[in-house]
Length: 442
Image (cartoon, rainbow, N blue to C red; front, top):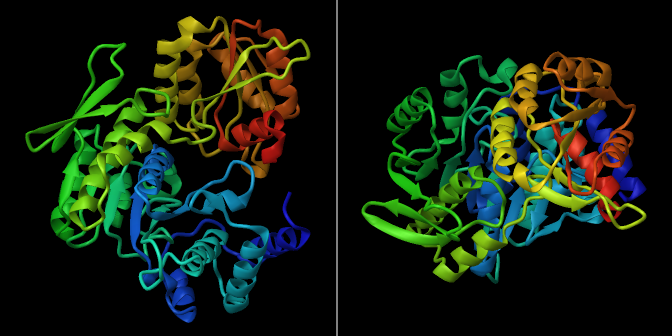
């Protein structure tokens, strides 16, 4: 549990950061300047995109740590505690470290209009510097892996000059802030490109590829796109390897430790990124590449856990952070491929108001027999009753429950041991259910 002092500080930070989500760099740049610009001392890899950012970062972190580098990781949102967002060498920031950094940053930002994400981004950058990840630090070299919070061009993390930029798959999400067309969203994501800094990106849509290439030409960014400049080749199962081809060279690699066909795309982006880091003077041996791909873990993304029933028998529980149509498409493909091993498939579902919930339901409905809905996310969340009604429209029996724990228990009691219960729709929901199943993380 959080230290009470840290909890009070976090509550104060939420109150002090009077702005809701508000994009822009001026506030965070001014705050960093008043704190001696800690980001300018760090070697950074910057990652943006709609889906897959966390998975790409998990692959990169595992590969780089195996190669002997110290690695700082900044991600969002968290599943259980805000500490998870800021990690060094796999260890979350401690209560004492978070409390100290947060108090110092809040003292400088007092009286200013800032967002909580801006405060936390500055805390993360200062923590990485304090933990010896700066260029002038003694000991092993360190790299900081930064995930954008929203978009890219005007995201608070876009104050850095990285060694590498990565843009994962782009689809519709956060349209209130990023635009209502794929071209507009891609323009915001590609806003992390920097002059002469190599970048790798996924595409999948001609419109997205056109924007990425145009932005790269404008910025003078050496850009390689998956499917255009480097290609993954997957043989027929059950072959345990795949190949990544680039500039006529084909490298055989192990299947990644993260489940799902879409993770091969994320692994390909990570490997292509590692190749560019090697060219920039960051050696990574093949054994580290192999070990990192196999060993990467990302909780709450196609993660299987057991229902702790009294008799030791119960359904398998599959947690997945799918919370937009693209994520639900990937989950639907996974259920289609793996569903034969688990019958029936029940679901615990929740979603926020700003998501395309009707489309998410339509994508998942063919793979589900019954659904239990619940409310998460406070004022941002849709009610359990409203969600249940949407599932009934597509012909699936749905029951509204008061809490995630109640929904999980009802689904698991109804599901036979040979079946599975899929938990998805919101990371808030996945975090709550995972805490119930793995109490030590709560």
